[in-house]
Amino acid sequence: MVVRGGFSIPVTFLDTDLLFPETYALVEQVEQHYGIIVQRQRPALSMPEQDQQEGPALYERNPDRCCTLRKVLPLHDALQPYQAWITGLRRDQSEQRSDTHLLQWSNRYQRVKLAPLAFWSEQQVWDYINRHDVPYNSLLGQGYRSIGCTHCTSLPATDAPRSGRWVGFAKTECGIHL
Image 1 (cartoon, rainbow, N blue to C red):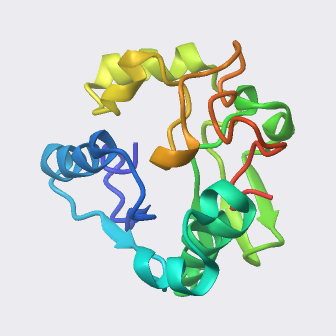
Image 2: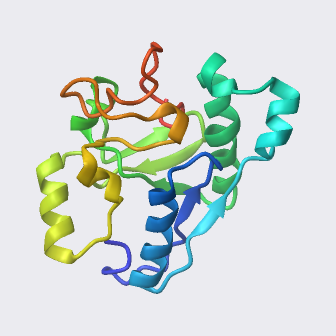
Image 3: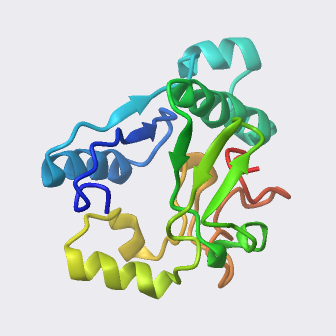
């Protein structure tokens, strides 16, 4: 939508270093398809550094801490030059997201957060993807409905779109939208 609208807005990708190969392939496909460069924002710590400081397999022991290090803090750094950010959050993705507004204030990042898809359904997203030839993660065709890091993402356990995330933990969000 940004490219079609002629906006020259930077696109940032939170690269946790723990993503599926299909996700990395999608980033490359998006760059080629739209003729843009996606800015990769990485965590301050490499995985070996994180393992040394926090112990191995932090995602298995304390996924909240892992998400903070690999997602929340990197997004904070990425947003520093900006007054606002755009996200693809939708109300139908989970109960926690059901009150998402088109425009809201992010207390965590002290920035305006725009969610232009807030009132879209999953079907409307797919209709748009098909109508406008939008590249998408091939894992969606394999039954995944929410895709994050490899260790914390599996096929959905129920009909809830985010039920395949952090299975076995009382966790449904990484923290960037809280």
